[in-house]
Image (cartoon, rainbow, N blue to C red; front, side, top):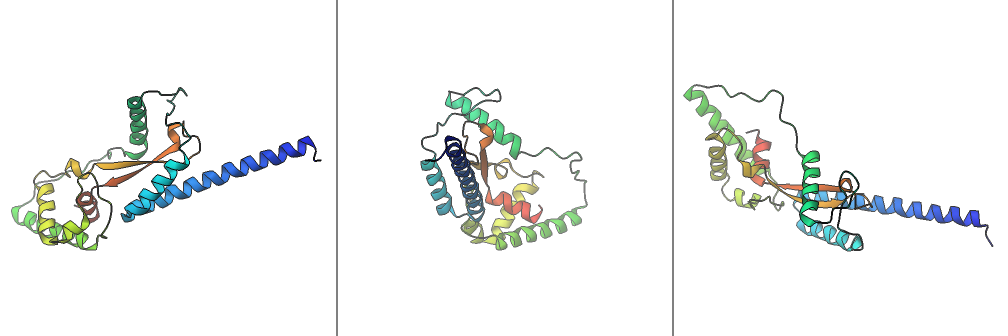
Length: 205
């Protein structure tokens, strides 16, 4: 018969190894889901989300606030998670914002043609079957007529000299990255951005 101390050490080792393997598994699943979201592979993204939801079905859905107190109301939980994701995902405004100076009509027309060419080129290089954002505009839809799509996107930005708000909005998918799901820091977010917004960023418009 094994001594009690030896048994306790073995038990502690097994529990530690199990926690470590579970943590590694969840992190691998989250990374795979993030890559699937980038590729627009909604089938793999759905499977991983479904499997993780089943695996953590025994875990409570509540989270704790910054003081370690459980948040009971659903709207308070959503507000806490929204604040957490805003903190880790949003970037600060640049210290020196871009200043657009007035240009001659001819020069603006030349720049307009060049920017439209870059947008059309970015549309052609975009991969098909990617996940869409809140506007549900797909790459395939823009590729049906790249010239017309580039013109519409450019005019939408050129008239207001800023990227429309709908291009900056995205769908946030919540995934766990740690075992303790009570902690709001145990969650990571994958943001599905607008396809036109990503094309404008790629083209530098």
